[in-house]
Structure formats: structure tokens, C-alpha cells
Length: 184
Image (cartoon, rainbow, N blue to C red; front, side, top):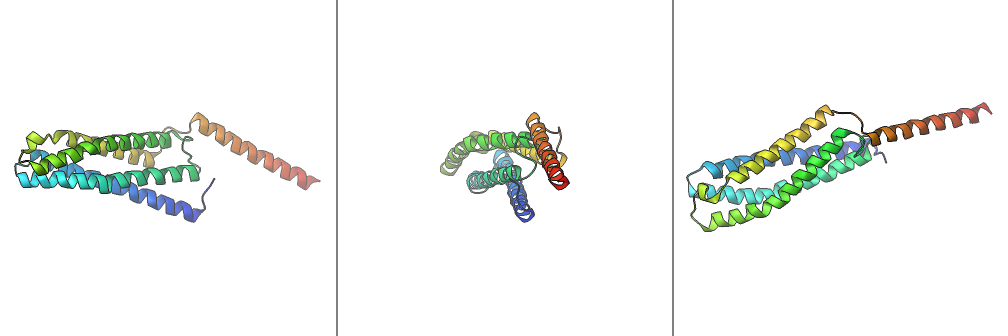
């Protein structure tokens, strides 16, 4: 299935927008996690944890799922395909991994935000370092997927070569049939 040019541009715009939103939210989350780790002010630490929880559930997860969905639409509705090019397949796997880690990580963020709000523990007692590590790792994965989208390395997969061969064989067969029909 190939999308019309207008639909393709709309889907691409939605994909870029959700991906940039995800990336920006992770950068902001990382800043909050670093603040929670380094601040000595209990109110700032509490606010950082509360903000990270809200940002995770209300911005990062929706943007990540939208980026995944729009990426699937783009790959399945264009010549790129989901498994025709290595860069698309790797990007898909990285995105699925990042979303899985994110969904497994968010209950911990919620629990830590609850503890931060209910206690007067310091940032060291709350253990913000894992939040910084997760956000930093997520940022690296998102930068990797962005890089893959721009450079498109590694070429076509074996499946992609098969599909190209089928497509060109089909075109050749159609051309031969048309030539044969015109010759009569």
C-alpha cells in the first residue's frame, strides 16, 4: 500500500512532531532528574519528582506511543517498509525497547514521587540517580533513532531485496505484456 503524497506528508508531519515532542520531554525530564539529584532544597526536590511523574505519564508516554504509531504508518505506507531497510528495522527495535523500558520505569517514578511528597527525605535518600541514568539512556536512544532517520545507513535487508526483485519483475512482466499487446 502506498499513501498519496498529501497523506504521506501529513503522516510524516505527525511522526516528526511526536518524535520531537518525545525528545524534548526527555530532555526536560533529564533536567528535572538532575535537579532532584543535586538540590538540597526539599521543596525543589519534591516539585522535581512531582513534575517528572506528570511529564512521564502525560507527555513522554503519549509522545512515544504516537511516534511509534506514526512511524509504523510511515513505514507501512511508503516504499521504506518496516523490514526492507536495516535502518528502519533498527529504529523500530530501538523505539520498542525504549517504550518497554519507559513503561516498566514509570511505576517506580510514581512511587518515588509519592515518597517525595509524603516525606522530608533529602534527594540523596530518595535515590534520584536511577532517574538520571534512565533519562540519559532514553536520550541516547532517541538521538540514535534521529541519526538513523537522517543518515539511513546499512542498505536493504534480504527481505527488501526480495521485494525489490518482485516489484521490478512485476514491472518487467507488465511492460512485456503491454508491449506484446501493442504488437498485435
